Amino acid sequence: MQDRYGIDQYVRSIPDFPEKGIIFRDITSVIQDPKGLKQSIDGMIESLKEVEFDLVLGPESRGFIFGMPVAYALGKGFIPVRKKGKLPCETIEIEYALEYGTAVVEMHKDAIKPGDKVVIVDDLIATGGTIEAIIKMVESLGGEVVKVQFLMELAGLKGREKLASYDVDSLLIYDGK
Image (tube, rainbow, N blue to C red; front, side, top):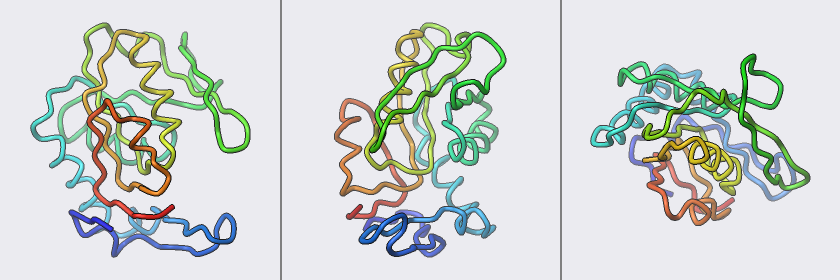
């Protein structure tokens, strides 16, 4: 395990959830604790200090929790990526594979202009499929993903490999799944 900001002490690890042999890493205990929340947001802000970008993008719903305060603190706009059917204006959408089935996410078509530099912020990277799909949407609108920032990473699921051509950072890395 790698823990640059002392966040692991706030993570509740739940064995055998959602199935036997899996350790669920719960972020609710991180964000419930004022110090855990502050260390998480401050760590993300610190890791973005030298990055030039225009917008923060966060996937529903935990990307909102971490992305909004990062965008606010750094004086950037925030783009929500939502489940299909939740946004009121014209959208762009993408379907991607889940472990059992598929999902669709979307964002407003006018959220990103050609040349915009985007940072994606989310709570966890596991297999990387959701973020890979979101990157495709950003790039299809002419945006450039300059960094992908996570609170936690489950290295055993190899999501970082799927995003190998991008600057990926995780504040807390667990070796297993």
